[in-house]
Amino acid sequence: MIVIKRYPTKQISVGGVLIGGDAPISVQSMTYSKTHDVEATAEQINRLHFAGCDIVRVSVPDTESAEALKEIKKRISIPLVADIHFNYRLALIAAESVDCIRINPGNIGDKSRILEVVKACKARGLPIRIGVNAGSLEKHLEDRYGQTPKAMIESALYNIKLLEDADFTDIKVSMKASDVIRTVEAYRGLRPLVEYPFHIGVTEAGTLFGSTVKSSIALGSLLMDGIGDTMMVSITGELEEEIKVGRTILKSLGLIRDGVNIISCPTCARLEADLVSAVKEVEERTAHIKTPLDISVMGCAVNALGEAKHADVAIAYGKGEGLVIAKGEIVAKLKEGELKERFLEEVEKAAKNKAED
Image 1 (cartoon, helix red, strand yellow):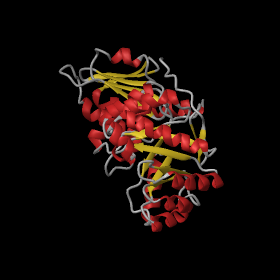
Image 2: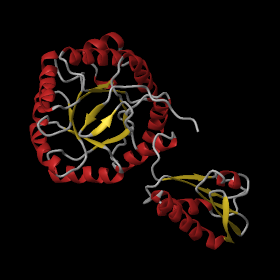
Image 3: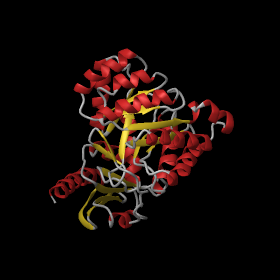
């Protein structure tokens, strides 16, 4: 198996979740509730946590939202990041309650305001994310370079130096654009120039389908280059789906081993069973399994036995009957109507045995 070699980075901690170095790549998300609505925001955060989110970010547009963070923090059990734009004073309030501050250097204000945020974060031992966005760059950089990867890199470098000059190095960096190419080029361009961990993602990526495509291409490309220490898939109006897509990207690259990985053949005229329905049911009935398993659901003889050799459990449909295979060994030959239940029994058994090992 090919193993991706990650770029060596400085390690920081966000509320106990390590980012960078040899830490696992964490998956983040962001709430869309009004942050001042404590109950709604805490409910969304807890949904995200249950879905597998490691760190959550909330927007802080006003004083009421900043002051609500203290109560929100009491009701959740994952690290909380405050997302600050325009008003640096909101970061000073938020720093009393959260685990990390994200600032947008394009709209946070001048050097003196950023240094006030640094002072507050130093006092509480909080890291800062320098969150560069192509759509909100500093005016002088946009005027000179346009909304380009070059402008994004220059923004990041300037603000990193600003924090370093204030003796602050608990930094992570993001370089997001709304399209794949600028996003990837910005991260690739900055990566050899700094040691800090990267939060990777495509901003304003759209709805479920479009964002899944954009994020898979951009994040997949970066991760295969060894770039990325924490990540977020941005999907308009979705919560759990962001985590599902993010974790699936990591699983597909072998960067995490978590839950069931389903291998199923493309549908073609050789199918000997209703594979579409079978795979859908298998996916639903194995969603609760957290033990890493490779399972194969194949609809004809072409690749079924070959895939079964490498799967923990496999089902190979034939004409009116088929095989259930565990670790390359045939454990049952049954009529088509009996295959799926026996297959699922073997999957549960394999998950239990692997968890006990």
